[in-house]
Length: 544
Image (tube, rainbow, N blue to C red; front, side):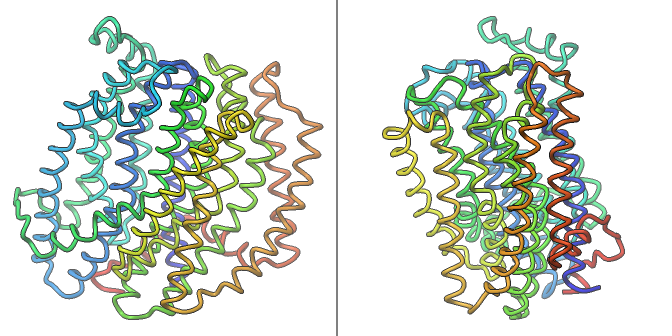
């Protein structure tokens, strides 16, 4: 099987688990929105949740895999299995100690932590409740970090199904806590001033992260992992991962930091009440597309790129990047168009229930418009970062990330203080989108200057064809949006039927035209949809 086929097969496993996870994630967010709406309590809960969630995205999804996999790949090639697993065991327990200290400190200093992320005051949400909820949630960083390391270990062996399924377990745990049979008894344990379903949801987040790590233990043991305690911060492999970790965390997490910067600015009194929650929900809708395809491919190509870089095959590595960028663009470009044109009916169908009323829907749809503009860039960043990490260059993405973060903060301030009356709650979303394009452009320019052309002409030709297909799809979207209007007065099944029809016909137009003009990404994308065969997943011990 070709390298492309292996990557697509691996990505299909991740994509399948991610689709299920995102569906569960939607049900989770819908349950939370139904219980809390965009109330001050909802904003307090989202703020408390996003603080450790930002750490998860930076350390679990980004820095951990990117700093560990290239080092571990080297161990598997040049050292015995006993030495390789000794390095992993030491890293695990070193990390466990550091994360425990971080988790305890975050809970103890919850007031200071929440204050740091509410620079503009707390007039639109309950600051004291956010502090209380953060104390419950924050220790989850211990298990999130360990789960991230477990996922990186399994990914090194091209085992993707179990790590990709962690989100399913987490979301089901929170969904269970959203039902009265569970949240009513749990909230009674909280002080009277803080009794709310949000308390039970916060406890479920902590339990869910514990389960995320627990489900990986059988697979880790099967691969040869031992959990015998062994702390050694002086181990050469541990030190190498440590040197890579901090800069990779900044480079890989810059988009996540940008999202959290959005939350900081959303607390301003210039922003309408409910801005924090509406930005969060809009981000979640956009992440559905980003998570299924971009994250799946970026996760699948990192081990492959690490092996290619170790062999000095930079030409093949660049070819792998161009291929992945084309496949992801084939989905993100029409998805961007669809989210922009159908943002209102999508938000209505997915979230307009219970306390999530008309105003909440308008706020979320408005933020979704501007987040969607940056979707292609958000996805492309996920693909170019593994090229730097595979070559063990962590400093360059860090420098770029710092400059882009500074630009993002400045742009957010300008949009807030100058254009807030025009952008309403969408200033942070627009700032994130613009910053993402700047970040990707800078990384491409630097990598191309060092290693030569990245196949930009071929990618540009492909994107041109995609743009033609997307433009035709947009015309169909506009016609159907006028004839199949979705509103809250309709029965929920009628809303779903109308939205499904609009999405289905639009998708048919796009894929039909792509087939007519022979977009080479179409058969590659169809291969991505096929279920992976376990026999094709070669372990790095035996095959590069």
